[in-house]
Amino acid sequence: PNGPYQSQQPASFSSSYPHSAPATGMPIGMPSPIEARRTSDESESTHRRSQHSLPSLQEVFLNPSSETRDSPRSLHPSHSSYPRPGEPLSSFPTSIRPTLSARTTAPPPLPIYGAHQPATQAYMGRDRDTDFRQAAEQHMPSSQHPPALWPPSGQRPAGQLPLPSLPRQPASPRQPNSAAPSPLETGRPPIHPDEDSARNKYEGTLGRPFDAYPYLDALNKIALSSRIIFNFAEAFDVAAREQNGGAPLPSRLPNETEITVMMDNASNIRQCLNDVKSMIQHNRMHNERARDMVREPVVRKPLEDEDVHMYNDPSKAPQQQHHPHHPHHPLGHQSAYTLAEVKKRRGRAAPPGRCHSCNRVDTPEWRRGPDGARTLCNACGLHYAKLERKRQSEQRSIRPKPVHE
DNA sequence: GGGTTTAATCTTCACAGGCA
DNA sequence: TGCCTGTGAAGATTAAACCC
Image 1 (cartoon, chains in turn purple, yellow, cyan):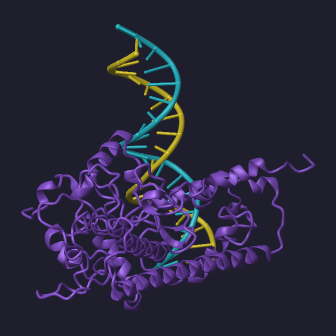
Image 2 (image 1 turned 30 degrees about the vertical axis):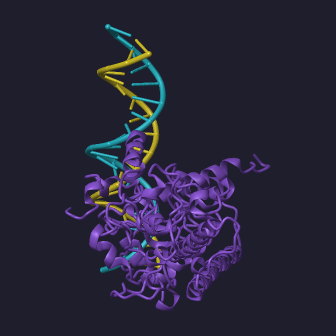
């Protein structure tokens, strides 16, 4: 509370930040059902408050183009590192590339991805990025760490005010959020409504096709490295324009080391994109295999009396009970494979982890979800089951009636 | 039009029962 | 025995009806 920036921080910082991780360890971008039930006024005021809260690490160090927000550009810490008109670039590199220039004072730690964190936390306290960043680093071999932040972190001059925070990871595809930055701000291409609805199979609360953590991690790293390169290009673009068409001074050109750093970042982006591609391909094959397994059994058309049972749930029909491969099973084709896995896992004590939807760690009951058995908490599992039943009944209602009727 | 009451619906928890 | 599913209960939320 005595830190130089604490006075700028609203008292309700941790609770007001819409994407902050609550005490349960819920990851960013996964609003809990409690959050989803907040009133519009509350969320509005929350968003309003968040605009005046401390910025995220990404915003402070990697998003100098946030002048669209209500803080003046000149107050942005990272912008202070860029060369200003008439300012010799010699002052620019000392703040923007401390590890790339010769230093007489003790150099800061190498600005490798994540390495800036202790210095940052020294004056910001435990940042809300910490949990996610640490989780991301756990998934990322050291060889895959982005080469360097650009500009390096921990360079906030005293007296400068932070910008309001940005959501620190791309807005969850499963949770459309009016407060989320636009694609122009995030650099993320807009999600087509059809694509979005397809992804939001379970009304934006459930139904991840694959493990979201590595996927989000890769996206986060792509965004991080992209911003580094963007900031690099923008900074030297400003410097070049200040020459008014003249030949740029050698001192205002990036040196070879910096170019190498940017190339490393570009390689990192490529690597992450390849990872995402592999995840998607793997997921596609996964689903195709599931469909193949579903098509194999001989399908007997259920009689009408056994077809409509509890909640119109055909899985309760005698011949189909506990037959996850049956096409009329409430989970349908997409989940058949996961149910097969459930059967395989029977007898294995699945360690209770986190709910794949709300990420809570404790629940009175673990329930089956789209990712398999015991992957959802009680509430999310019931919600998921209800939606599945509803979806099944809707599919049944639009199905043409048999001729004999 | 605004406030209050009531009913319907939704959400979550905890338990019972069936299955492998 | 462990797991999964369904159900009742309780509380919260929303919508409709009613009254002033």
